[in-house]
Image (cartoon, rainbow, N blue to C red; front, side, top):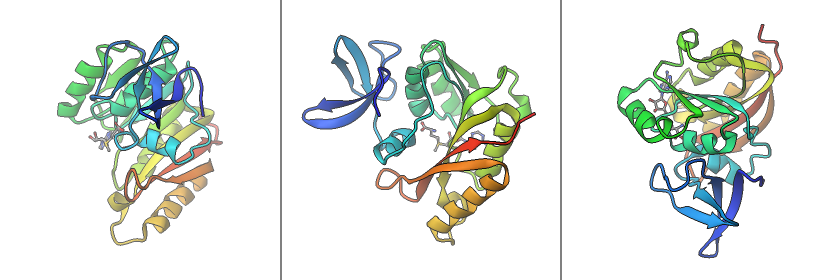
Length: 226
Ligand code: SAM
C-alpha cells in the first residue's frame, strides 16, 4: 500500500513504513524523520503502533485517507493518532478520545497543540453521548482500548457516530477479554458480536510478532445508524 501520505521507505537497506509529516521538523515519540523527494516522512514503528503492525501484516485497505474524519478511541499519548493525523491531513479530522488525564496531557501537549486536525476528547468511550465536540458522522472508527467490553463499547460509538457504510478498525486484546480462552476463539467470538450488530467482517489480522495475543478486525458498518 502506497500513497503520497504513506510510504514504504528504505533506511539503511531496510524497508520501513512512514507517513508524510504534517508538522515538518517535529517528531512525537522519538521516531526518525527521513527526507525523500523533497518531503519529510516519519518512520512508523510497528512495535509501537498496532495500525503500522496491521499494515505490515497485510491489512488490505487502510480505509483512513486524506480528508477522512476519524473517531479514535483509546488515544493514549498519541503515538498512532499522530500518524493518523499525518494521513488525514488538514482536510480531515481525528477526534481522539482518552479518559486517563496523565496520558491525555501528553496527547494535548505533544500532538493536539501542534496539529490542528487532532481534537482531544477527555472522556470515557463508554459514554459516547458526552463527546460534545464531535460534529456530524465520521468515516472511520478506530478502537484500541484494551477493555473486556471493548467490542460493545466500539459498537455503541459506531451507532452514535459512524456513517452507514463506514469502516471500523477494532483492536482485540484477547487477554483483556478472557485469559482462560484460546485467543483465536476470543477473536471469533468478538467477530460474531460484530456480525450480529450489523457489521460485515472484511479482514482479521493477527498482530504477532508485533503484539502478542492481539488481533485487528477490519469491518464495514452495514446497518443504518439513524
Ligand atoms: N492506541 C494507542 C496507540 O496506538 O498509540 C494505544 C492505546 S493503549 C493500548 C489503550 C488506551 O485506552 C489507554 O490509553 C487507556 O487509558 C485507554 N482506555 C482504556 N479504557 C478506555 C475507555 N473506557 N475509553 C477510552 N479510552 C480508554
